[in-house]
Image (cartoon, rainbow, N blue to C red):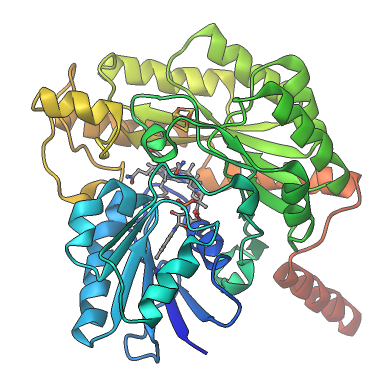
Length: 425
Ligand code: B12
Ligand code: SF4
């Protein structure tokens, strides 16, 4: 049985974020495309160390973020020095294709379903790996996307304070929008590709976790499809987080009924549109985590102060601040390249916690200072862990109400110990 080591390289976690890890999604989807006779050992280096002396026939490196690239290249070098072939794929490889290709035996651009990975493996078996398998924008039939291989995850690592983290799943690929800081239009070719709903439901029903994260780029792309999706999800009684949902009263109501627990909502200004959107979600019992980008050309220090005050005023549950970062193949990078505003291309610093470009209305130092100001001010009176605990409390209440609450194994263990202690005492 050929042994594959699939590695997700470590990345520098944003220091301000709560110290927990979500299970990686790209690798588990990719792993599902391997034929059954392959033995896959998965290492998420964010939670487990790599044993470079482990027995392996082929190394596959999966990278989602630009800031994973330097570590991914280091890992590849290490294995290639031992004569082991290394192939790389994932979003960051698509965005940094030439640079990565130069240091791998092969790169894969695009999505692996539809038999594409099988072809690559055949070439490898024949010792005829090509340097590049380019399927970017040549999408496999969306129906060929099967259930992800979550069994390869070391699940114990994705537990935070005794609580099992969410499992990730996607019901669609692509995004028809083209927002200025985002590479998704390049990756997905602006084509919204929903998966057949029955296959999504089948996959979700098979996940042994009541709490999920629907990582679809946006649930605001096709009204009819999202309504159908929510209707089909409702009987499963799962609780889920998602990126933005179409901001219409009936859609939000159906999302809540289908188990929507909280939403990552981009907050880019202090308008009534945002205020009302947040209110609508909260009125339906859906929590809101504001995703706030700092540094676009319309912002200065005072603008950021107003934005933070606004977030507190509209009472979002959590906020995640990131510094606008000129990632390759985004509209904003094309503009900043032209204007000579990119400060450096040290990818390990492209974490969104560091300023890598010249803002228009502030110095880079001022923007960096305002980033710290935003995190500190928002969480000054109510800490991040308390706010997160509240979100979890909300989901537990919903689960108790519909009889789906399951104490996570560690909490159940602690409760048993405590009850035993009471009896003995
Ligand atoms: C889901 C998601 C997340 C999730 C992470 C989920 C997880 N743990 O995996 C969350 C919400 C946590 C997240 C966070 C962030 N994200 Co994000 N995220 C995405 C999103 C929307 C989808 C990714 C995904 O899962 N796609 C579905 C999977 C199945 O596709 P895939 O990974 O491409 O895998 C397929 C192929 O690539 C291939 N493949 C994958 N690996 C390999 C390996 C080999 C060897 C081969 C052959 C093939 C292969 O097979 C798979 C199946 O076909 C993308 C946008 C997008 N559309 O891509 C942004 C995206 C990846 N995120 C981005 C960013 C910026 C971030 C944040 C930094 C934002 C922030 N400031 O907080 C954070 C970083 C996290 C951190 N530092 O803590 C950027 C990346 C920019 C960059 N160049 O670095 C993207 C591209 C969006 C954008 N703004 O442009 N994100
Ligand atoms: S930011 Fe969201 S809505 Fe905009 S292009 Fe990217 S994925 Fe689509």
